[in-house]
Image (cartoon, rainbow over all chains, first blue to last red; front, side, top):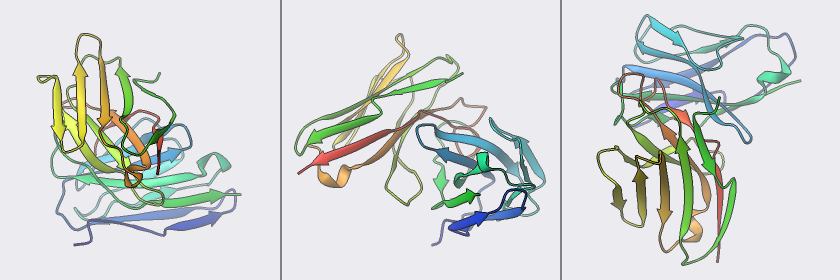
Length: 114
Length: 116
């Protein structure tokens, strides 16, 4: 089983360009989220969704948009890329809300903004 | 405001030794404390987790110790092996704000190296 699939794995953008990071899960999970990982910073929550049509902001949402039209997909859009958005992005999903629920992570997208 | 503080940032342990990573939290509403393991080029994967109603949880060579009054928890890796070399993240969440994909608060991570 594929689990959580992220594409692309690597991307280089120029400042001001836009792009969409794709995330798909095949586990029929209701809850999905995007985190960014920066050296020495751990993982920080960008946006999350508790089901199709429902999204909300996390800790660091500025500069990113999300939508959730299906249970399987949760794309992350960068509207106008900035060097500060250079990071590794992880998508995660889980079956339920709340503590005790394992979050499954994709393998990440390494984004460089020049 | 960092809600989960993790130490040390990096750790070198000899094969067969005990690796210890510590975390402290501030939010008393946290009630789920997982540890995630991440290998280079991979996403984090759940290693072990604990709830505050127990003081210790053991799974194989991995043990979480939890001190609710001190708001601290730690990961112990017994008989550490070179294959344990990875980055370890502690995390925390509340029952209703999300312990799954919708809301984990992570520590900054510990880069663990097990020397043969």
